[in-house]
Length: 351
Image (cartoon, rainbow, N blue to C red):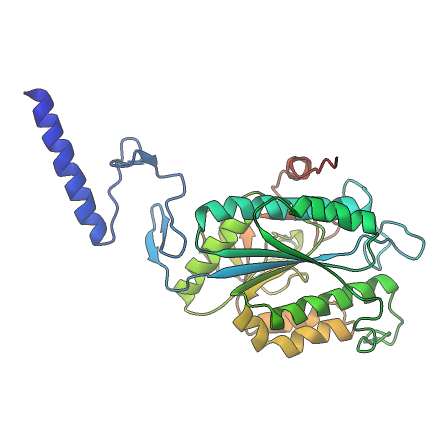
């Protein structure tokens, strides 16, 4: 008789839970913090891409801005300076861990691939594509990049810039009248290629990044959840940066804090040229974005920062990616981040 009573209670409980959900609520067993009918711990991911975002104890946000596709453009440049020294663009500084430049490229691409694979399991209706735009890398480097990308069920393309591509539209002196380095010219024309692809590729979102950002596995997933949720709440398109730069803690600035899925996101006014946004937003500001690629400003991203004065740009706390620059650089490695662990997890062993 006792078993029959328990079964009846369980049946009534399931019906009640289903009824409550139709009104947009969830029942939580406070004694063990689980969803009763699913035995799912509420600290796990409860959100459903393109449908709803659930944050305990803040509740549910209905998604009105559904992401349909994302194209990730990674700018690859593995050549050194004029003496083939592995330094950062036109700076005389070595990167964290002090590996050859191609090692940062390999680990960046590997981390993005792994992050996309993880995201594909959750965002089953989103189309993923990775594009590598490469300047001057040797054929053996390109072959290794290809080996990282193939056999991963993610559409990809490797584009080699022509030797003379965009050189006729890039000014050889900066805004101070000083001659700019060949490394900087390469970076600028690779940027221009990225924006040209934005104009021509059929994609909802674009994530444009440099080849020295090693990502956590959840990075792409969190960025997609955050983009859908925060665009739905703010009712507008936004920019997202994957890195929690140390410069953000050097000044006490006013900001706004939002919650994505598993990260807080803060409003910021400056990033490097690594960010995610929609095609609609990028086309809106394309004229200014291209100015970063044809004239060397100080800082290089000055035109991008001017865009952030009009639009919302957010970065995660803690970081989702590690910018592998010099350890003392204010736009470098993020605080409260397991740098060595993420670096080691993305090592690539080539056969």
